[in-house]
Amino acid sequence: MAFDPRAATEAHMASLSSAELELARDYTTGNHWLMLLGLIVSAVVTIIIVKSGILDKVAAKLERRGFALRTWVVAAVYLIVSTVIALPVSIYTDWWRETQYDRTSQPIADYLSQSAIGTALSTVLGALFFLGVYWLIRKTGQLWWAWSGALVAGAVSFMLLLSPILIEPLFNDYKPIPEGEVRTAVLELASEAGVPEDRVFMFDGSRQSNNFTANVSGVGNSARIAISDVALGEASLDEVKAVTGHEIGHYMLGHVWRIVFVLSALAIAVFWLTSRSYGWFARAFGSDAAIDDPRGIPVLLFVIGLFSTLGSPVTNTLTRVGERESDQYSLDTVGLPDALSEALVKTAEYRFPLAGPIEETLFYTHPTVKNRVRSAMDWKAENLAAIESESGAE
Image 1 (cartoon, rainbow, N blue to C red):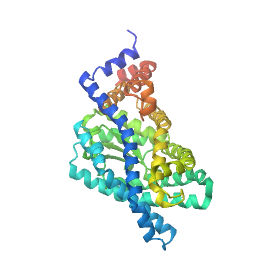
Image 2: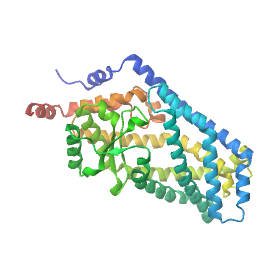
Image 3: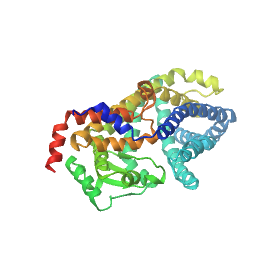
Image 4: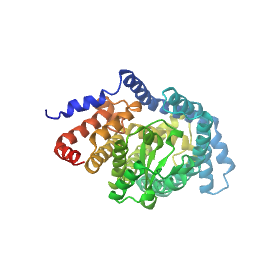
C-alpha cells in the first residue's frame, strides 16, 4: 500500500488528546491577547511616568552634567521605574499564568531573583542603546531614523557575541552532554556539520520552563548549540538526533545573520514611523519633551513598541521561513522524519498545532506543528525508497 503523507500526518496528530488540544488552544489564544495587554500596560506606564514628572526632576538635577551622563541616567531611571510599575503584570504573565498551564515549575523567589538580574542588565545595556539613539537624533537631525539600522545591527551583533559568554550563564548552567549514546550521536552530527565539539551543550532549561526546547545562539567563536534538559529527558535517541539536526541547520544556514539584517531593516521602518508620529503621541500623553529630549523616552518607547507589535507579522513570517529551512536541513542530513514529527508534537503543548493560515501569519514565530509534520511526511514519501533501503541495511 502506497505511503499517504496526509494519513501519516493525521496519525501523528492523533497522539494528542482532545483535552491536550483544548489546553493548547486556550494557552495560545491567551498569548495572543497578551500582546494587546502589553500595549495597554505600556500606555499606562507612560501616563504614570509622564504625569509624575520623575524624569523631569532627574533631568533638572543633572542639567549641568554632560549630555551622555544625563541621557544615560534618565534612560536608566525610566527603565527601572517602568519595570517596577509593570511588575505585578509581569508576575502574572510570566510566572503565575505559566504555572497554571504547567509551563513552569520555577519557584516565585527564583523567578524574582532572575528578573532582578535581567532588569539590571537591561537597564545598563538598554540605557546605553538609547544614549546612542538620542545621539543619532541630535547629530543626524531628521534623518536619524535612517542611521538607526546601523545602530541596531551593531547592538544586536554585540548582544549575540556577548550573550552566550557572559549573559546566558547568569540564568542557566551550561555543561557538556553526559557520556552515553545521546552524547555520541549528537557530537557525531555536530562533527559532520563542522560544529566544534566544545560548542554543543545541554542546559537546565527546566529551571525556567517545562517546554521541550533547544536553541542556537552566538556568532563566530561564541556560537553554540544548546539542548534543554527537558528535551533530553523526554525525547528518544532519534528525536534528539532530529532536533539536533534542526538546530545545526540554524547554525549552518547562517540564520543568526538573517536576524541581524531583518531587525535592522525593521528598526529603520519603525524609527521612521516614530519620527513622523512622535509629536502626536507626546501631546496625547501630555509630554512637552521634544523627540531629541531624553525626558521623552516613555513616549518614544511606547511608539516604538506599538509599531514593532504591528510589524510582528513580518518578522514572524521571516522567522517561520528559517524554521522550515532548519526542518528541511534536519530531514536532508539526519533523515528521521517520524522522529522529527514526534519531537514537534511535544511542542504542541504550548503552541496550538492546528491554527489556520491567518492566525499563523499574524502570531506564530514557527509554522504550526501540523504543517511541519506534513512537510516531514511529504519528505518521507519522496525518500521512502532510500529510508527503507537504509533500514534494511541496518
